[in-house]
Image (tube, rainbow, N blue to C red; front, side):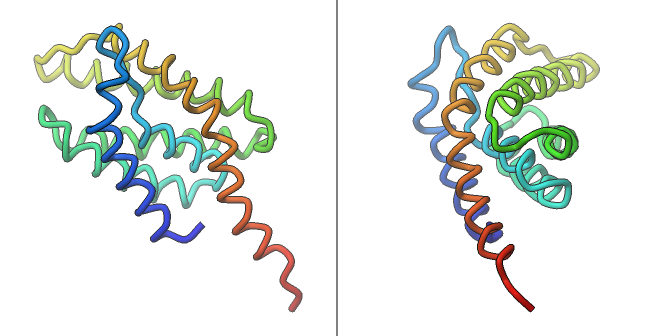
Amino acid sequence: MKKWLVILISIILLIFDNALMPFLAVNGAYPKLLFIFALAYSIINGREEAVFIGAFSGILQDIYFYNGFGINSFINLFVCLLAAIIGENIYREKRLIPVISSIFIYILKVFIIFIVFKILGKTIDIKIGIFSALYGSIFMLFGYNYVFKLCNNEYEKNQWRFK
C-alpha cells in the first residue's frame, strides 16, 4: 500500500476516533480505530511498515493525548513492531489469530500506559482500557479483512511482474 494512502486512512481514522467513537462508548470505553488499523497493518506488512505506522499513528494519537505527549508514539512503535513479529509467524489470511493477538497487544499497551502514568504520579482507569481492548477486538474482527485485501492488492500487483 502506498504511504500516502496509509497517511490518509490514518488521518481519517483519527477524525473518527475523536468525533464519532465517543458516541459509541460503552461504560466510558470505546476502541481506537487508528490503533486497530495500525495493528492490522503491522501484522500484514512486516517490520519496516510497522515502524512507520507505529510512529505515525502514535504521533497522531499524541495530538489528542494531552497528559503525556510522546507516550503513544513510543508505545505504538513498540507494540506495532511486536505485532509485525507475530504477523511473520502466522497465517495472515486467517483473521482469528490476528484478532486474538490484537486483544493482547491492546491490553499490553494499556498496561504500559498505566505503568508510565503511575511513575509520573497520574492515574487512569485501567478497567476502561481493558474493556476498550475487548471492544476494539470486535472492530478488528470485521476490519482485518478489509485491511488485508487493501494491502494484498498492492502485493499481488508487484508479485506478478516478470523481469
